[in-house]
Length: 138
Length: 129
Image (cartoon, rainbow over all chains, first blue to last red):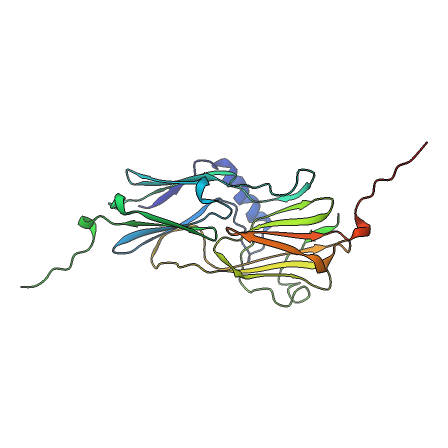
């Protein structure tokens, strides 16, 4: 079973999501959790796509160990000058950590990652021995 | 400073902006008031620069529309977000210069700044006793 764990947020995340639920209209959805993550599985690989706007490459760390993919890092939230008054603050993730359990054997030396326009894509190729095999008929 | 969020519901959809996308997500926004400007910082991950549309209409409503475009494989096993459109709008007071909006877009974060009109900037008045 694939599952994500967000060690940083916890109760805070629940509170924000409840706030969002009561404040939003039905046709819109506010996304407060940071970062949000999708995972996809094909015959050859598991692909993870995370929304990490505002994170520069040097501030992001990606590790894979014992079937667990971890994303952690920081991003700059305060861009306005120090004299400014804050009227609304919804963006989170000043420091973040997100963990995904990957229940498939991965060829961990062949993992690749790209970061474009705030979208992180990590491709985890499956280990040869779990890939589907076509059997030739003699 | 006068500003308020424009909430689009079924009732006022027709009266505010004519081109609100039908299905959209509300991006997270930070709003600041500096002495010189209204500043909004918007998270728009997965959006290419050309797919962001910023408008200030005749009623001083600032709106941001954007479309996500990134390659998404089939067969999701974990799904925390759905690829789609973003929309957010704020009504600004008359004290802002709608013709001088500046925007910077980098790493999926949009920063919009609308300067205050020169005569609206806070003035320091020395009062002698």
